[in-house]
Image (cartoon, rainbow, N blue to C red; front, side, top):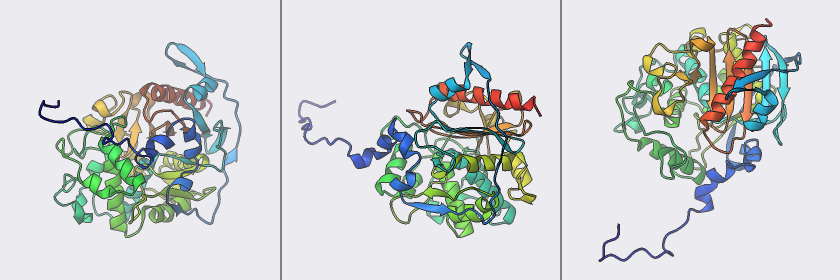
Length: 397
């Protein structure tokens, strides 16, 4: 409140946010986001994730999915799901074959690389699992500062790789997109506006004891990616290509978009772009316990660790204010518990899904262009529908 001895600031002094500051908001608005989510390499610097020399086409065995799911007291069709949740791609794989494929997005198609947002986190987890198996990262209990000395003296200094994987670092506040000066908004502005991204993350405060509570955090995954890059001595894109992407039999190269400021950095928590079919190949790897064409690409135990955790604070319904009540969490994947045994999902804002049901041998990729980053009701409807599709094919095995 202004005292009587102070002069209020002149309206001409206060500056409205510039386009540069607001570009993150602008590119995510409907209907523009249907274009931006398929053209991120036109908007930001990027680095290729090269596919391998061997291409393994996915077999196509089309099914007409004339089924309904029950939501909010009524039966709804998949056409309603796509309309209500702004679907851009929808690919269903059962027993290793594409059984349903639909591209309602204006710019979407089988060869379109989609912005996957935080599904990228689940890919980062796979890369860390490979690095641990190889000995590139020594232990789950190595500290951040062991690999990134520039994090000494910060809240992340003593945080372990395991804390980062389960988002129990105890660093940072709730990740909220609708508060202009929130940590995640400052992070976004630094990425897109040429700011110091590492400085934003290093400045995050400690808010809880490490290991005690789940708090969804893109910062945690970003630090995890930086730890991996430091340990491997190469960029996230190069490591992803060499250890994962070239083994999938992918249709196309993927790519990470990078920060504007140098040294440019991939966003391990949100900047991978790939086709829906190639993302489905990642899901098939998860169904097959990390094996592709007879090769153990991701350690079997790492895949199984991603299906669920025995830590009570990570159980379904126990994540607290930063997780929806129908999810648990493990290893950078969202888990669904005993009601949907062996089912788990990578998730990204604006409605990106890599849904895996190991028991049913079903993988579903759904990308979307929601008008908002988060929407609990849209998410619950989507997961309800995806579980219904998986259940349908589980009964036809």
